[in-house]
Image 1 (cartoon, rainbow, N blue to C red):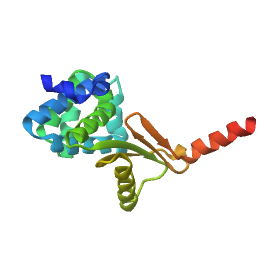
Image 2: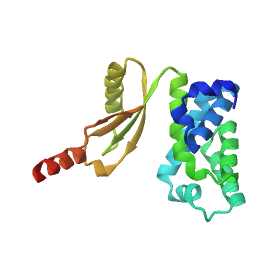
Image 3: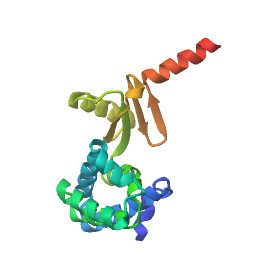
Length: 189
């Protein structure tokens, strides 16, 4: 890592996934491919979310290193990821760090957003949000934080309804699950 990595923020660098994300980000900045790598990582994240086989490949300790690397490179080709990301996925497979991918992807998105002068909000909803809902949410968050906001969406049906929004260390929890838990606590007295 070069001396510019000190500007990435110590909270991201503190975790193993954060260190890998920072290394990938530094490579992407040097190659001027920050956005391409981010798009490739989004495709990888979607594949993890949608494919049980791919999820098993990234999380199972039973898959041999060489097999994991071969399968990861074949999957990278199938997903159409850029060369930097493809090489990075190979390194993760060889180092048996594919299980860190979700954390690496989250940390990379934060680094890329900060690089663009944006803030990243992690938004968890009970159901998938429509494009209009995402646009409205971005507008409200932009008004609240005073700058552009990129959103990292995930779905958790256990919320029952509402949203949980995290921006840095701040959390806004308007989920029905939290409201029901608060009501149950109040009733216990």
